[in-house]
Amino acid sequence: MAQVIDGKAFAARVRGQVAEHVAGLKARGIVPGLAVVLVGEDPASNVYVTAKGKQTVEVGMASFEHRLPADTPEAELLALIDRLNADAAVHGILVQLPLPGHMDAAKVINALDPAKDVDGFHILNVGLLGTGQKAMVPCTPLGCLMMLRDHHGSLSGLNAVVLGRSNIVGKPMAQLLLAESCTVTVAHSRTKDLEEVCRRADILVAAVGRPEMVKGDWIKPGATVIDVGINRIERDGKMRLVGDVDFALASSVAGAITPVPGGVGPMTIACLLANTLTACCRANGLAEPEGLTP
Ligand code: NDP
Image 1: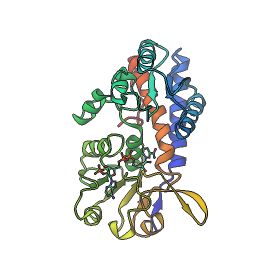
Image 2: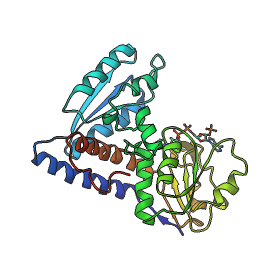
Image 3: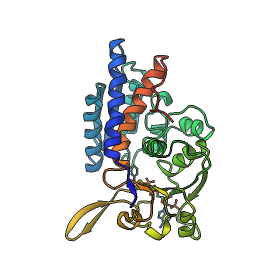
Image 4: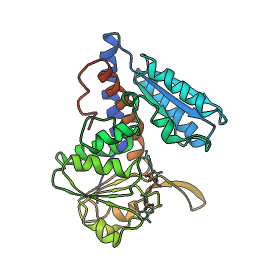
């Protein structure tokens, strides 16, 4: 049976490290601050934003929440971003996606100061990551990388397959694995012989948004499987969260696997806090926290 990688415990450890660094900064009179902007009342976004604010405060950082009505004009949101960009108490800014349909998400994200773009979605950060330079790295792939490094030590030379090519998960994950000297294959909905491609992976990262799509016989015996998927399905009359990997089948073949829930999910907010800490250290000309950056 595969070793189950406990993302909940890992995330608690990361938050503990962040809190320790924050305490050190506070002793020098520096308080890292994270501003989260939510436009509209999307229930899932509301839950995320509340959780982010709570965890920000728990690690000792300052949390600034901005909740705007769904019909806020784009210019008003851009003006708020300008103010947050200029605010020295704010080291990280996160604009919760998706934005209402009348807003241009790319324009809004690219209005952020790249140094404060703790989601790592600004075009400059995307370019920096793609060219192997110091960037703000998207939180979910950063969390996956931390777990992989913890499990394997060096990833150099391993065959990695990333299933999914989104800008939020698949593409940055592939860039990070390439930077670790993995041999990286990015698979997607047009990939031929998908199962065969997956079977070559020493590391398989699944980010497709298809409940339990990856079966046991898609996995190389002993491989490490990182399941990013969060899918809500009904089973036995109850709503359940499942990943993109069939956990029961995969865990009898894989060497290690992340569960859903309790795997990648908790790492995402922990990495948001880590990125805010990194941004604060950079803004103050201090050394970056070890182990919390790529
Ligand atoms: P997207 O929908 O943006 O991208 C999905 C990718 O999967 C696309 O590249 C698509 O290919 C590919 N794909 C879809 N169906 C298939 C298929 N049948 N075979 C092969 N490839 C397929 O999703 P995201 O990347 O945003 O999210 C992926 C999953 O991760 C979701 O379940 C999401 O909820 C979860 N997630 C979890 C997070 C966390 O914190 N744990 C954070 C972010 C996302 P193509 O490009 O060809 O269409």
